[in-house]
Image 1 (cartoon, rainbow, N blue to C red):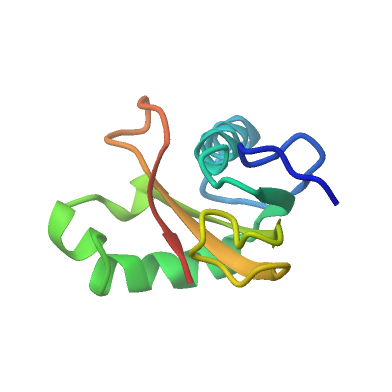
Image 2: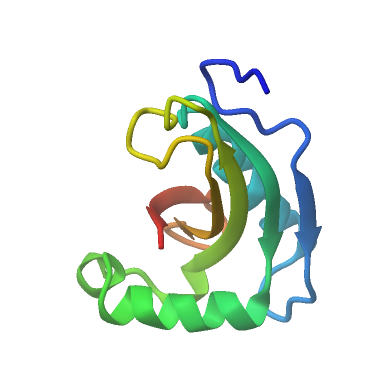
Length: 126
C-alpha cells in the first residue's frame, strides 16, 4: 500500500450509534474535527471512526477524573469521545507507531467551551 504524507481520512467508515446526549449534527461536527486532526498523522490511514455513547460515557469519566479534564474545568456535557481504527505504513507513521500495524480503539477526546461552540480535539491515544 502507498500512503501519502498526510493522514488519509477520505475512505474511513463512519458510524454513529444512538445518542441521548448529542444531536447527529453535534456528533458529525466532532467527526470533522477528528478527521482534520488525523491529517497530521503522517503515513497513517483512518479506516473506521465511530461514536458509542456507552463507551464515550465511560471514557469521559476517566478523562474528567484522571485526564486533562481533572484540571481544565470542562463540564461533562462539553466532552465527547470518538473511537477509531487506523493503519500505519512501513515507516511507522511519524516514527512513533509500530511499522505496518493497525491501531484499534484509538480514543479521540473532544471538548467545547459551551453547547454553542465548536468541538476541538483535546487529547488522543489509549
